[in-house]
Image (cartoon, one colour):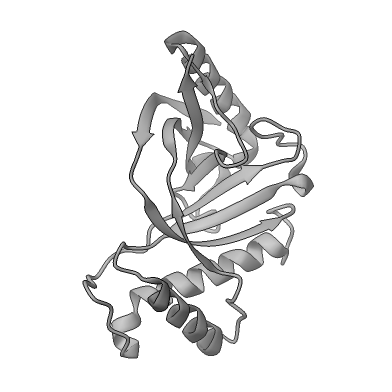
Length: 199
């Protein structure tokens, strides 16, 4: 495991539209709720991207690359993350969608993906996310090695007059830049982002 030294505070004040699925449980469970949710997210996301081929025209549409998967994580009674208690995780998995996607377009994508993929995509929701002030760091390595990067982030906060600001709405956030099916664990790139406030 190695962690890059690029730690920084950033303010994310813009609203982001996302396709989302929420659930509870160990993300590593084979065929579990988390893995099923990812199948739904990708089905809906690619249906939106390929909508012109299906004859669904969205106002303002432009061709785009489907953004990376992101995850917001929390556990009852825990500030941040306890990596030893994966079965207790509550997660919100999201993939960003362009601003031109409306609620009506999203409903069309859910229905179309469900029919074409023979997959119940009704759990997918269109959400708007606003994060506020955050600290983030690029973690390179296995997911289970993230605590070392989190410790560096916490040290950075203390040195610069900030502290973590976890709440029911402001959560541990990960952005997955590597496909775990194709990338060795020690080479996976994950942006870790935490909500913060000035002390």
